[in-house]
Image 1 (cartoon, rainbow, N blue to C red):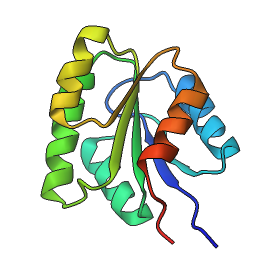
Image 2: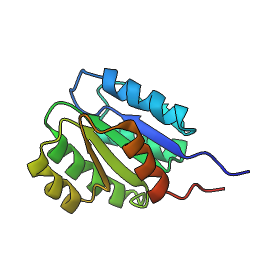
Image 3: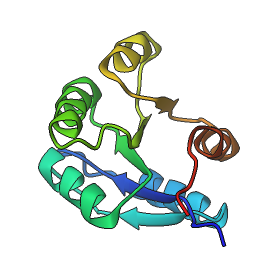
Image 4: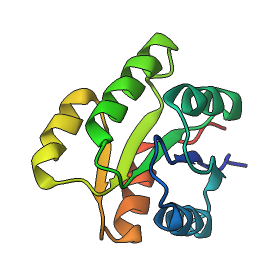
Length: 133
């Protein structure tokens, strides 16, 4: 039996809007993935700790605050330090088009600005991750 894709959905920083993250988490569950939702106001260290503890395949960040660049820089650096940079990393939320190349250079694998259809995000995850059995 194949193990379900495990995805951590996190709301980093001071962003207090989590309705979108909860809706995305439900869409991922409906697509057959196992979702761990951390809630609001997570630090990078908390996200990394949870990702390791839960042995996730994907970390998905929901960022509405506009702080996506510094948060993603800090997260990718910490992932390398903790030797979990093989975990697929995605970010969604308020992401201006001009920032997409910068996020890709930082090492963000999937970038999903607001309004991205759920099917597109789900398909991307399934195409880019091989669940561990």
